[in-house]
Structures are given as C-alpha cells and as structure tokens.
Length: 190
Image (cartoon, rainbow, N blue to C red):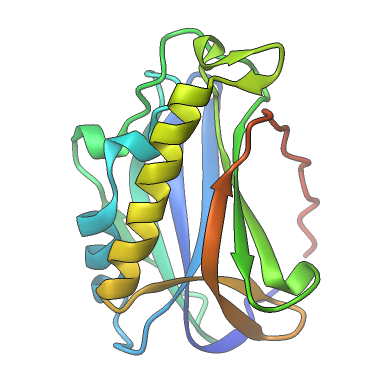
C-alpha cells in the first residue's frame, strides 16, 4: 500500500534494535520547512534519555527514517550515532512482547484524532503485576511532554496522521499509561 499524500507531514520511523530483534515506532510530524533533515534535526535536539527510561538497557534506536508524505516513497535515513538519548535505560530484564504505551491526543474526534506509541521491551523492574512503576511513569511523562514542547517550538509538530483520510491533526496532549500494553501486529498488504 503506497503512502498517502498529506501536505507538510513527515512519516518518521524510529528503528530499534533490542533483545528480541528489531522494532519500529512510527510517528508523524507536521513541518512546513519541506526538508527531511530539518525534521530529523528538530527531533534529535529534543529527544532525551528519560523518554526511554521504561525500556530495556539492551535496546537502542539506531536510525531514524524520515519520509515526506508528498507521494514519494523515498525515506532519508539518519544514523543516531551513540548516546544515552537513544538508548533504553530501564533495566536488564524485560518482558517479551510487552510495551509501555504513550497515548497521543488531538482536538480531532474519533480514531483519526488519537494515536499511540508503543515503547518496546519494557524492563521487568519498571512494573508490578502489569502496572507501571509510578515514579518511572512520571519521569517518562515529563520527558515526553518536554519532547512535544521542544519539537513544536522548533517547528516540527508531532501529529496524528490519518492515511485513510489523508489528513493530520497536531498532538495537544499525551499520556504515558499506567498499564503495560501489547501491540497487535498488523498485516502488511501489498
């Protein structure tokens, strides 16, 4: 299925390597600069280690793939290099197939107005009985709020993109959930 055309919106894939192989977080950013490198630089300047404080120490974001949703399937790949801001720091033991969940909320209603980011390989010590440790949850919540504010101030607005409607809505608030989650795999249609 080809990517949609949505004016001024970029698909950003955070490519993880972790204890169970590979994972990808896809987020969208609205940016009128028109340049993939500007979106990447704004993200790189705003990302912090605390965003991944629930994720296993053995997980890292190796690269970011930024694709402008202008009808071109070509994504620009940026290596993150080494640095704590791209690494999980939650502990060594992890729960297979369990994630921490960040909910994204916009002013649009319904499914097109909300999104999710699944933080992979939640460290076992950051939860008890499926409930996220409240101290770690507050730390990660503050980091994501700062990320949202900093990328917005730089001109790259985190948004929820509706591929079906070829629209986007800027994220107004986000919440790190207190329950762990599992991500349902989607079938890739060709």
